[in-house]
Amino acid sequence: MPVKLSRALRNKLSASGVAAAFREYEHRFRMEKRKKSEDGERHYKEVNNLYYDLVTDFYEYGWGKSFHFAPRVPGESFKASLARHEHYLAHVLGLKPGMVVADIGSGIGGPLLEIARFSGTKIVGVNSNARQIERARQLTEEAGLTHLAEYSHCDFLHVEASDESFDAAYSIEATCIAPDKVSVYGEIFRLLKPGGEFGAYEYCLTERFDDQNPHHLKIKANIELWGGLLVIDDYQTVDEALRTVGFEMLETRDLAAQDGPSIPWWQPLAGSGLSLTTIRSSSIGRRATRTLIRALEAAHVAPRGTTRVAEGLNQCATAIAEAGRLGIFTPMYFIRARKPI
Ligand SMILES: C[S@@+](CC[C@H](N)C(=O)[O-])C[C@H]1O[C@@H](n2cnc3c(N)ncnc32)[C@H](O)[C@@H]1O
Image (cartoon, rainbow, N blue to C red):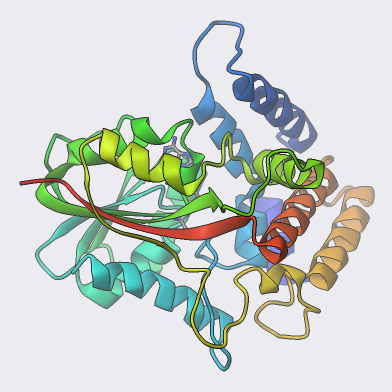
């Protein structure tokens, strides 16, 4: 039995009712998607928290400490490609010692720690999920980076920091989770000092996405539900939202469209699994994990409902790999924008 997975299941997916939490997530997601709730309020934060409480250990087990995709070239390891994607943001934003930077939607801190180490910049991770923040703090201690990394447990639409308190901000596959782009970009704009830059990797539908094609629509719905996303926008919506809140656009491009030989970003989800670094995320690896979890659940070692979470994530992975293969979706629409002086 993989030691890491059993530890994760024991520690976090405790007897607190995984099955009930999963049902609650699905119900709330569908209500929020239709912008309906019993009390008339938006509950995107609760939806996200339910989702990340359920999936975080699976992500860490199957993917690692950085919860994002990356462009990759032949001869480059999966791990190196993730780090390069993170370093690229630090490089284009000119992060250096003395700056104070916000990481919007910081996960368990994998990218934050890598960027802090790479650039020497002080970074504040903003995240609404308490369990992820706890794990990030633990990893920060272990990495000996408490002097460069700190975390703020709050909603990225209402960040607990004063206006113009950051020299720069970045977000890796996280602002895509906001209920709408204008709200989240507007909050980032508020946080930046005049002249401060924002860089991000956005999830986007590409121009190949056809909203009349039932297969495309099904894939999109699966990515949304099982990926915890209320909406997936297209390039134009992202660009317009940045301009609407006042940003000056410096650069936007889809990094999935690379010149020269490359390994598709979605390959780790679709591949045969015959690589030590990507075996767990591959279709074979995911099947093996699901079988193992089913056995653990039957033996009452894993809480009831764990298999359902694994199946949901498997559907998400299959949908993302298919979307990547068809070229209708990208997780790396790169944006770089500046708050005018
Ligand atoms: C796909 S993960 C990416 C995490 C991290 N950027 C990385 O690449 O490892 C998305 C992150 O956004 C966070 N998030 C989602 N909704 C949020 C909200 N309303 N406020 C703050 N963080 C949020 C999630 O908790 C999660 O950590």
